[in-house]
Image 1 (cartoon, helix red, strand yellow):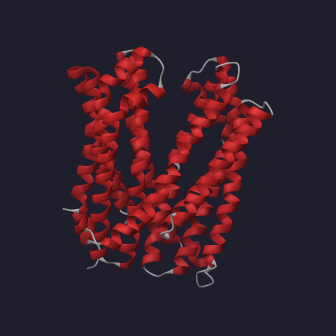
Image 2 (cartoon, helix red, strand yellow):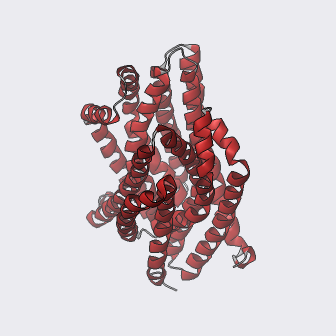
Image 3 (cartoon, one colour):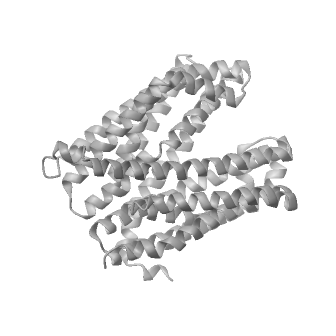
Length: 441
């Protein structure tokens, strides 16, 4: 298969969506770096720990609600492909209602959620005090954060990656600016970091709603209230989101298990693995641009019931995703040692991380396929296959984690993680022919 074998129109459309998403994803680790930097210049390390622990809680909770974005893109793209403006409107309303409900629930149970999180994380008293202050402020942004997930997914479902890019740059840029004002300028400390995020989330929601209203104005007017609250459609949306939630929970567990098992090899190896996982995460942010493009374009093809379009989308995303994954691996092979040195100044950790760097080099090449298949199945809203594949691969992964490290120590642990992503890709590839047959010719 060559690049030329994918039609030029699909090449352009894949890059039109993937390019802006990759750029917007870059702002996420940049924001985390600024959050760390502004408190890193305060006189006590407990401030860094407080922000790190507080952000970890929200990252875990919000990642669990990632189905609000993933579960919105596919159905919206299918409605767009089918030329059904009423369903496009209704999908946005349903998803925003669901986000508001979950956001309100988080606010209602914020005290027990926070207590459980701090009980599990075992931070020092000083760090926990700062993290608690961060949590108490930022938690009020939950409704906005979840609604922003919906808006990003809805715009992407309409094959529009430009406005999600605008929203991400606006939100993260404002957050960075307010970080500097509140912490460096006004001396608010950890509370300033949390307040900056809270304000940025609601400001982004306001902008997102304005952009959504503008986009709705381009559609034929009106959608019946009965369409929004249609029982069958609501149940279908809940089933899709349930499957995505289970899949995400299992994926979260898999990486948590990797970190937990890393600790058996000592603090230095644990730290080295954490550094390398940062490299894995950075590459995943970039490669996810192609997975998101696949979601939107596959959804459109399914909505049009065009098997030829589905094949064109899959071919183009596989080709370009594979090329960028190889480029990513080449970059890590050539300059991974430099990235390691930027992430840690501890000589022992640097040395161990370099020993295991080849695993991080291999990860983009073996993982791009499971990322892309995730996007394909999400776009087609075939989430029960995603859920079932996740269950099977997680069971196999647990068996690998408990056996391979006994044979090859930390190399065995990394091999288990590599095999997890290979298995994720293979199981979904096995399901794909059935998905393709379900789309009319």
